[in-house]
Length: 328
Image (cartoon, rainbow, N blue to C red):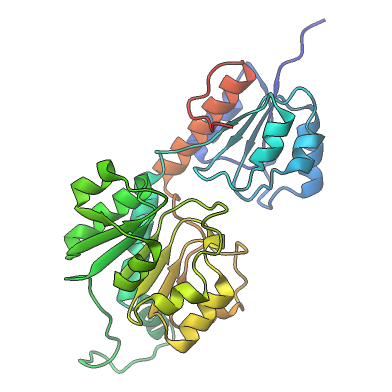
């Protein structure tokens, strides 16, 4: 009797090149949810019951129930994301014996590009401009309408000077930014010095910055940190960009801040929930630009992320060291 191949379950279809690699794997049995619709909770719980490895995405909630449903064979969970707030790491610690892989580094450039894109869209009021064209409105060239702002001589605030925060700051400097401040759990002199960035408190960053970019992970310290109090401390002309995680912002408080003119514009690639309903007040707000979480959505990046996730999963199944492992 032939021995059973290890089972690798993948919760969604991968980009073309990574998908081809996945389908060609010969040393594992690949099972995959390939529907355009997200995997249901019931399907996920059933699929993990006899899997040796699991490749998931950030919209999959990997909590204690999923980990409990996983059979004793499960050795690795590999998420196709740099963030892993959708995985209950405490439940993994309690269970023991399951490695957690993630995909850092490979999405830095794409996410930083998107952060700059959103900043420019907000500053130049692109949402209104596109609506004007789509609706056939406007009276042609005007010296006094549709005016935005530019970054020349402005202060940039980076919340979380990690890889993405650094890449975002480096991209924005050529637009005329003259001062960079950053906040975080501790100073990062090694990263700050090449950018001439100054470490300040979160409260001071809010007061000084003309453009605030959220580049930090979602955790207990950062959840809801952008709330009514934070918006009240910001400049009324400030732009807020979020390409990190939606729950870092209290969206009810953001809506109130936009309605009251406490800040000029919010530009979001991430929301709660995702996707945000089209009739949500933020989606309809003239001073809020929203993209459908496309921060890492390039062919190059999504394939690199998926391939790293496959590498992590295969290593975990074979009992080898993961290429990118979360320390539990």
